[in-house]
Length: 539
Image 1 (tube, rainbow, N blue to C red):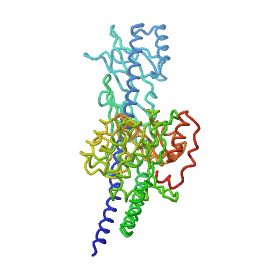
Image 2 (cartoon, rainbow, N blue to C red):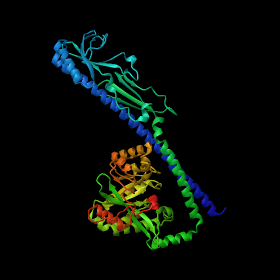
Image 3 (cartoon, one colour):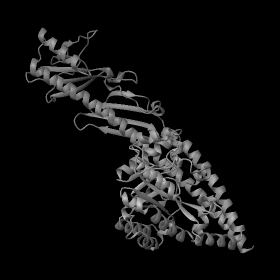
Image 4 (cartoon, rainbow, N blue to C red):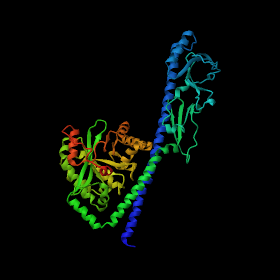
């Protein structure tokens, strides 16, 4: 078999592997995101019930203490008025009263419709000053919580009692899709059920459950909330389907590129590319990054375009794979950085708050050449190091994580920042965030596009935003094209975004005019006319 054919077969196998790897890893990440979201939702639900329970009991104790201080356990007419006034002021108490040593009510206000038996157990030696009692705990159902009595032992031996209203623990049950399968149990003294909502689920699939337990540090109250893991993971199912389709499409595209690269004369490709490099036909286009709260421009991302002598603009999807595999991407990146310095130096020198994002590929992190290039191009220029952001993509794996971490650390020493592009779509996942010293998380257009229609995509954006905030990282949303996407991003706390809703990638002159207009320095040129569908796909 000819060597070229063998290499072609190996390349196709590599394409299949590269296409499948993001699918496998992506599904693992989506499952992890779903499980994390479920755990957080259950913790939040349990905490809400516990906070409400503590408020109820604190209000009951405060009311009983106040009645004790002013009344001392009397059932006189004036004291019944006091019981009524205190009950009326309460948010969670149904009635107050006085109970004898055997547990029978001496007076309750407002009086119950029917006479009751003992509402408390008889006084026992060693009883605490505050005790909690559930009436008929065996009758607690989903629709009928237990009747909770809070008792206060007065200094004169009398016992004051507060009955908690049945609806006191009625809370927002959380997301609609979890309401049917959610199981909530609130217990008193470790074993007495105060509230039970829903049936204990048997789980779905492998029966795995997501459970959260919250315990009060003040009162003997415990809350348990659980749902089947399968119910939570249904959130990411549409996104898994999208990921599968995208992976298949990517495999077809990559296969086509491999076929083209193998069966097009290499010399022809290389000659054309080298000629383009020599003529400096690879130009930087700049897409604005905007603050979606203030409307101010925060900087731009540098995106390469091949501008041929006849004026045709070629998007990077048509040549970047060859540029990277042939090694020409290094010279291309140097040319882009030099041209960026020349075009944007005056504007960015006058506005040190603006930032420039420059894309790097995995090979840039194999050695220190990129650091030498940065210093040789930007040292002493009008664009300072702290205005530079270098993006490392997650779509392709870094060959040596330790070496990449050291190179990024040296970038930090210079004052540059590093962004993780295509977050959540490729090989690195959370490992890159933890290991590389990332400063900025860029939310991929895939998640932004699906955010308005897929709850799973919105969940992933929530997780990325929370993760970035917890790690002190910046956040930029990519590929924003609609006003509703902007609104959702604002609601989630994202402040920086880029996309065609603001402007496509622009040539230097048009970007400078637009930025100057936004900065109040002159008249800008409408940006939305500068790009076409091909640019939109490649940007």
